[in-house]
Amino acid sequence: MSTNGRSSTRNKVTTRLFGHEEILRALDRQVKDGTLGHAYLFYGDEGIGKATCAKLLAYALETGAFEETPSLLLDAHVLLPEEGETTIGVDAARFVKEFLFQKPFCSPRRTVIIPDANLLTNEAQSALLKIVEEPPASSLILFVAEDPQVLLPPLRSRVQQIYFRRMSKKEITKILAEAFGVPSKEAERRAAFSFGRLGRALQTEKKEEEEDCLGYLERSILALWYKDRKKYAGLLRKLLWRESLIARYNVNMNLQKKAIQELLNI
Image 1 (spheres, rainbow, N blue to C red):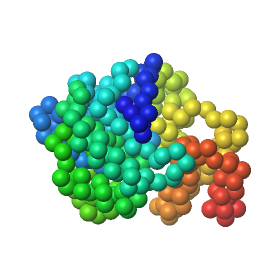
Image 2 (cartoon, rainbow, N blue to C red):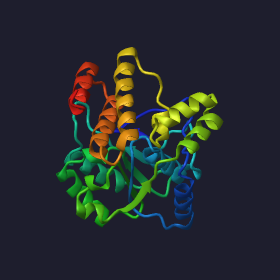
Image 3 (cartoon, one colour):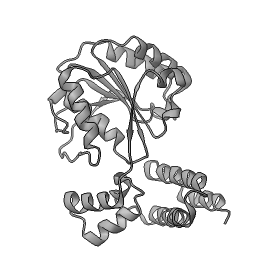
Image 4 (tube, rainbow, N blue to C red):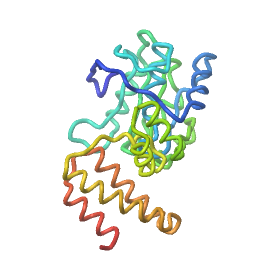
């Protein structure tokens, strides 16, 4: 699988999707009976498994199984911002068109995965809309986002939307214990702080500064959640977004903690 034209292989394969077996079964049926669409939007909370499912679908098309292998995917491309950029612009959308109109090497589809569809500019979305409206027969575009509203209405209305739900604390505890060998008490602790997102429960330990910031953020989120999650729904959304920012990007932890304190009016 390529990423903005750069390819890499993996020596170790660990990717699996938990908690969304029904979605995998439905996609598997569509692949096998030839009814797979040309454009999908996988949406749901951060760390829920959307991007993993998109990647596994690309593997299924090329290898016949929803499993990641060490083999390099020849007919899949992951669309990310160019180095130094914070958005995905119209030039990237033009590359998507060029990529999708080429004949697949060994898969029935050429697949483009956009794991951060929220970064698409309006111009890029307009260009992609033209592809979605008149797609090559062997094309597949997989948009991935937390909120389906990040896509403009014309584009959003032309893609098949699949929602990825949160899991219960019990489900996550069981997965951590049985699939990842996490001790039961630790699995329960992680599940309690996961807010239904397995990806969050599986996050590795951070460096001390980051752990301090994330720890403070987690305690704040948990306190508001149990205090009155409906009343503080807007604030919780902002805090969860900030947690995602900290986990995914190299940010200044001291500034992040100050920003969190300002949100909490401390």
